[in-house]
Length: 148
Image 1 (cartoon, rainbow, N blue to C red):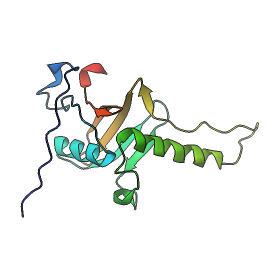
Image 2 (tube, rainbow, N blue to C red):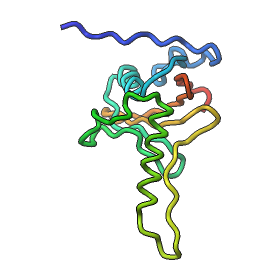
Image 3 (tube, rainbow, N blue to C red):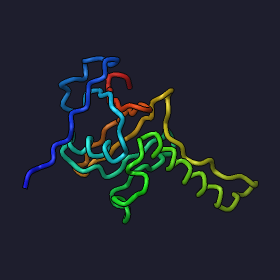
């Protein structure tokens, strides 16, 4: 049985080449990706399955959890990364709006992705116990550890 090869993603011209060859962090890339393609790329780079993909500063918004019963059947896996994150934020907003009010008539704010301009920052945890910070740009994908 032949293994299916992933297409090479083009390197981004706008990023520093200092991360190229760093065994701990993927080099910057410039290509549109679905959430499923992002997860597959990270798994291929680290050689270990992604267990969770989350975004947020203080309160993490879970984007993907492999241990969730329907993890591989999530409807947003085939959406572009920014659209998949928006889907998760909408679901979180809906969840929070349906919670009972806390004492004082307040609700906790919904969890949101950590954004900076056109970038979304993620933390990816892997089955082998390692984790990586991942920067994904809207409309294109770029991992660039030197810009954190």
